[in-house]
Image (tube, rainbow, N blue to C red; front, side, top):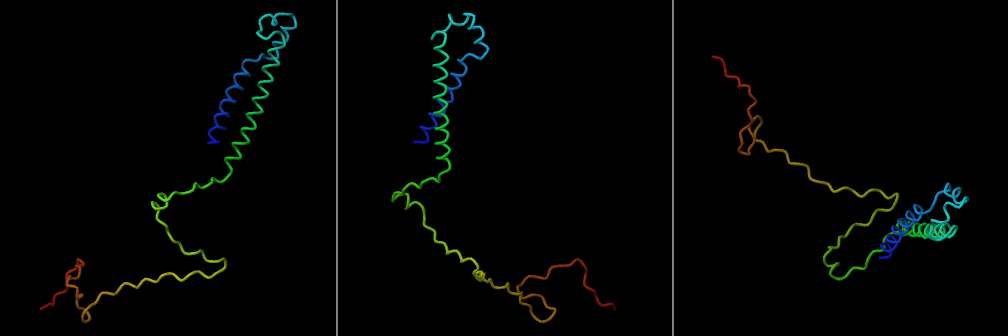
Length: 146
């Protein structure tokens, strides 16, 4: 909630600073005011506008900088975990994990899987007993010559 409020203040101060800077006269306008040309057209008088706008700009610039520091500080902090309700705890299943081994400890033995069993075959040269015929290799078996 505080982050949203600070963000709104940041945007408003940035927009107001831009508006105030655009309202102010440049340094070249002071040369014409020395001859009396610019004093009659101002709302605040000859010097009033310059000091009021520059003070407002300085105040808004300070607000902008302090607000930027506050937002940066809030962005670097770790988020605080919200307390869970009973319904939230029931919805997420608890998973148990094994504790991590200590540094320098030997690694735990890996689970061994049994080796695949070799196919059972009959007498030497006979086809396997699984009932399936041996695959054809594409070469005919030699027939005795008569």
